[in-house]
Image 1 (tube, chains in turn blue, orange):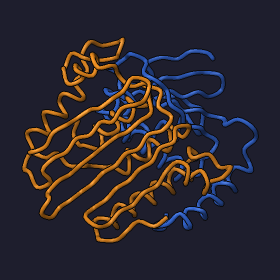
Image 2: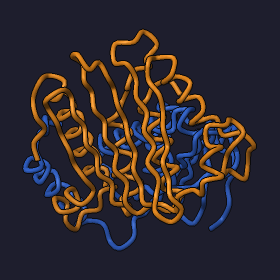
Image 3: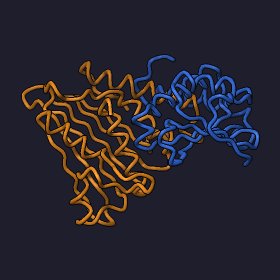
Length: 124
Length: 187
């Protein structure tokens, strides 16, 4: 991405984003819940989420919505990322930036959950 | 926390949990004679009553229902005091809270500021319903941006759209670099 140093330049990005939304119909296909509690933050939740966005953008996948997840009270599993896709809610624990990238490629984009990292899964 | 930008993210999340709809983060870096690094986070959340306020720097104070110790603010205060600074909280029930902390800029024990762009980005991306303003000054140069401004730019594109997020991240990173290189941020 080119250097952006003004809101005017950011406006061009907005137009690119708008273009990519044309193919999206109604609600996003995938929802990502990020929990930003103290333990998650200290454990690298911000870095995991940033890696996720980077990978989504690299792979040009925009049918996703990232929202606040709230704490699940599972501090020893933080950072936690929850994915809602195809009627299932899947929770991943101890998510590193590398894991976050793989979750994007396999689960978010292709719908293949990565079982070994899943700590909870239930039907919506 | 490894870096101050993570402490800041933690305090910002506290503001969100206190029901704030308007939050302002200010960072002031004075590297010359004043030799001071100052942060403040101001919100219009539910605030604290005087009795609770007295205990916020006590490690065993927390509003969490899932764990018994808080530690975030007491440790930050200790770190600030070890580095020629301090911390202060003022709050009024029903009005909001201001958390501020500062350091001697050049002090050996001052933690690094870290990825402040990342922290600000999380606010715009994950909490776009909250009106967030970010102000950053380095000596005589300054930069500011708010949710309101970004929403004007992105119009009907949500701020959590991956392309928007990447764009905002690039804008923040470049602007903060410019501040340290002796340039004002542009809006």
